[in-house]
Length: 310
Image (cartoon, rainbow, N blue to C red):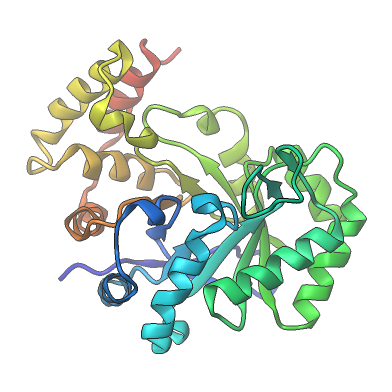
């Protein structure tokens, strides 16, 4: 059976490596509340993922209208041994209008020390774990006081509540600014990228990651499902190109090729899978063995751009 490779999220030359090793494929729980799993079913799926080498699980406090972390925590109660076998990632700072958060008057961002610390503690309780391996700021906050973020990170780190920190959806400049203030090295930036949404290739995100020796985590690696369902001209053009490429790659599936296209990038991208279906997860694991040539990769990129490279 294929097993998932591992990477250290950040390695700084001349300094001790950060200790956070993650699986190269991550399972995300954005839609967990739609999967229809009982706690026992989910515990079984998690155990099968760990057996395949997918040990890193990605959450956010807001997923499922603030419900998904608790659903995951219920599953962990069924198999507490999984806590020692997996890495838990979650995010905070988005405040949604929700019946679960009656005090929220409108959707906003909050990177105050008070909110970050309270969110982390609530996530620990909901997920039924004693430590978060990685806490990310979910979105850039235009009202961020970076010294407050640094204070929150230090409080959580000293207490042993959070081992590592990073960001999500931040620009290189925003990453640099926060890095200047916080004591702990930011170990990743989780950004959107797929064959249908490839701006991170050219907006400096991956260049910044290569320069500073961290691996970006990738959300929505299949374009939010549009790669399979959308009939827009761009999507049809990309699927046609992928069908051509797959002919000399042992007839791999569209989703496998989409992952292989991301895994080919030298920044060692870490895709976050969003499916709870075991066959889809197994297919993703097998995609690691696909090796795209430069021309394979650029044929798909050209179709995504709608024109050849300049």
